[in-house]
Each structure stands twice: as structure tokens, then as C-alpha cells.
Length: 640
Image (tube, rainbow, N blue to C red):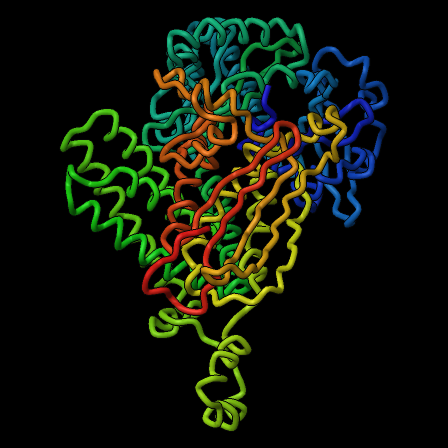
């Protein structure tokens, strides 16, 4: 079982190993600890270090003896920052990972729930008193009914008053409130809010019909209901197993909660269902997530102004190329479209522009559909989707203009120098020294254009549950004029994605191979002189599993193509083929087979080339050789 299934839960979830170290937690769990998910997963602290519980949690004392889910235990806690709260927690075995036992710890934060429950219990107690008063009144009515018409009228009036009072009380609630018995029949008592929360009048209907359950869901619900009324287990443990949400036709988020209605002898006579509209709470959580993503984007923009400028210029060029291809209609070049969309998505992901990332990903899917089923209808859908990327790009610029600056400033790279120094120095330089001036003031260390990939690598590693050390830069101080390499540097995101996703193994696998659990990516730069002129060599190396030529040969064999005449070194160069990928599952990280093609294309555009060298089990080197440029060449040179 993949632990990522818990990423979308709103309740905290931890996974512990035999030593009670935390090997996984989701976002709500990290918020409960006031720590980031990355810090917890990377440091793998002992669970006891994260929380100090008011009473010992018995299940934590003997993990190896837990074979079934434990009953919920309610405890108060305090974390290192001093924050306190109250939770209910349960432990249960989790499927083994690489032969190692794991246990799941599921939290339910009851700090707010406890307050709400007290409120609901008080309201329920008031309603039970009203019902008891009604039952007493009915008994008195039967006793004096014979020949006591006046008494009957009086009691009837009292009952009507009580009914009106109870109806008014129920209708004053903003929550749906109704009761069902052990046969599944709903009573006539319900609140008016049911008409909006569960969209119907539950009186005299079957509970499964009221909740809108499908035919497949009804048998399971009946089994739960039978277990509930027989009290084979405590009601508090069984209630959460019932339907937790009502599928509202208008998209509202309706939460369902269950409370027992007991007789004087303590037996369950009915179950009270409380339907609460929590749409505003869910929306608030979504808004908070958007705010966090936006804040992250702003920080990235401020910290990486040069890289942002390169991204803007490159995106404008790619969008122009994309529009030109789309204008060709059904004759559009699919390879160019794939390269543009994939590179736009990669660049946007660096700066957390989720609208562009999602739209480009959708367009890639539509492009695949058009390729599989070429038709005007599929192309029109692709075109409409792709044109929206331009709209999101312009909105991003408009929303962040105070940070990005004016169009004039974005169109060129600004170098901040003392104007007095320029005025005194530059006019007196002869033409022979102006090149030196260029190298001194306009060239920059090449390593600065790779710092942006540190966060990219860590983000992908976190998604893939892998551990990667910070990127090592060798000879990063080598000066280059960045403009000629702008497009090439942007496409290298695909190399780092591949290094983490395809190359570096999981920590457990690396330990089995006697490697450091954390992978290493190294980037080196070298300038060389040849008779054709100076060259720049960029090497991106990882210490992962390497590229297996056998897998590539099998891929081609499955297509009916043979690579028997090619050496292993020649075979692995096929990773540069357009839309070729060894990935079996398509994700937002990889699987399109477009990234390496974009790198080779960008290198060739400035007269260079790219190739890979790899050894299975040792790692992979991506080598890019391009002219060492101090201006845009009129005629691109070919790599030696």
C-alpha cells in the first residue's frame, strides 16, 4: 500500500517503524507538530520526541503486539513549541515496506469537536426532555380520556403547545437533525434544515434512502446498522464507520455525525443523525492552501529575480512558437507542441504558477488524444486548452507586476553598477579592451543559474519519498554570458527531474546496495580551447541506478523495432528520441518522454550537442557541449 493515499486526508496520519521512528506523515500531521513534512520525514524522529501525552498511550509500549486496529484513546498532549491540545488516536498495522514492519497512527483532533459535542449533547438533552414530557402528557391523556372531554381538550392543547415548542426548537437549528430506528425507519421528528442539508424530508423513509446510498452501498450500511444497535463494540468506535458525508447535488460539503438515543435501561432505541454544512470550513482550508502556495511563489520570485526574468523571456518565446504551430491547424508539428508544452510546464512549476502547470498538463493529455485519434474535434480541444496557457501567463505577469517590473525592464537583463564608475571608466576604453569590460561587468558565474534547481530537486524527492543531498556545483564560478544559454538552462529542469525520478533509488533500496541513503547530484562546468574555438562542457551526474540498455531494447522490440546492430552506448542515446520514456506510469513529474529531447534541441540551437554515459547500479552522466559564447553566433558551430 502506498502511503501517499493519506496525503489528501484532513486528519493527521503518521507511519512508525519498529523503533517508533516516523517514516511518513501527511500535511495535517506536520501542522499538528508545527514542523514541515520534509523535516519530519528526513530526520525521522522518535514519535515520543514529537508529543508529550498526559497519560501513557498503551499501544505505543508494545508495537509488535498490535495485529488489529486498537480502540481510540483520548489524551491531551503538548509539543516542543508549547502548543497543547486533545486528540483521539488509534494504531493499526500497516503493510510492510521492503520487508520492514510499519504501524499507522491515526489522529482525530477533538479540541474543537469536544466543544461542539458539548453543545450538541446539551441540545439533545433538551430535546429528550421535551419528548419525555410529551410521552407523559400522552399517558395522562389516555388515563382521563373517558367521559372527560374537557380534560381531553385541555391536555390536547398542552400537547399542541409542546409540539409547537419542539418544532420551533428543531427548526431553529442550522443543522439537519433526524432519528432512525433499528429497522432503518426515520421518525417524524426532524429539523427544517434537513430540507437543505440532506435535501429531503426524512420522515417515514428508510435511512439509506434519505442518505442517497447506492444499491451496492446498502448491504454494507445495513450490516453497520445491525452492529451499531447490537452494541457488539462501543458506539463511539462504530459511529465513525458510518457514511461521513452526504453527496449534495449543489456541491455543498455536508458532514454526518451519529449519536445514540438510549432508553431508561441504557439500550439504544434510535440513532440521532446530525447533518452539518461545513462548506465554509472546507473553503477556508482550500483558501489557506492557495494562500500558502501564493506566498511560496512570491518568495521564489523575490529570491530568484534573474531566473524569473529568464523564465519570462523563454515563456514568451515558447508561447509564440506554440501559437505559430497551432495556427497551422492539423499540420502542426506534434514534436514541437510537446516540447513547448512540457518546457512551459517545467518552468512554471519552478515558480509555483499552478494555473499554468495544470493547464499545460491538461494540454499535454489532449495532445496525446489528438495523436491517437487525429480529428478536427480533438485538435480544436487541444488548441482551446493551449491558448488558455497564454491567459494564465499574462495574468501571472499582471498580478505580480510590482515584483516583476515593467515590460521594458523584463525585456532585458539589468545590471546594477555605480554610474560614476561607468562614466569615468568606459568612455576611455579602447575597442580592444571593451571585451574585457564585457567579461568584467556583464558575465556572471554559471553556477548562479543552477541554484534555482536546489528547491526543485528537494520538492520532487519529497513527492517520490526519496532523500537527496543538496546539489554539488563544481567550478560554478566560471563566468558566462547568460543570454545565449537562457533556453538551454531552462530546459535542464528535465535533467534534474529525471535524476531524481528515474535515477536515484529509494533510501531503503540504496541501503540494500550499500549506498548512502541520500542520493547525490553533481553539476560541473569546464571551459576548453580547440582549433574551432572555446567550448563549454556541462556535466550533470547522479549516483543512482543508471540507464539499463536492456529496458530500452525491450521498449523498441515491443514496437516491432530491433536495436541489435547498436552498441549499449548507442542504445541509451535513444532517451533523446522525441516522446520516448521508460516510465510505465504517466505523472506530472515524468512519463511524457519530452524533456531530454528539449535539452538536445536547445543545445543544437546554439551549435552544440548532448549525450549520456551511464553504468547500471552506479549512475548516469548527462553531458552537454556547446560553444563558449560571448554573443549570439551568426552561424552556429557544430560540436567537435
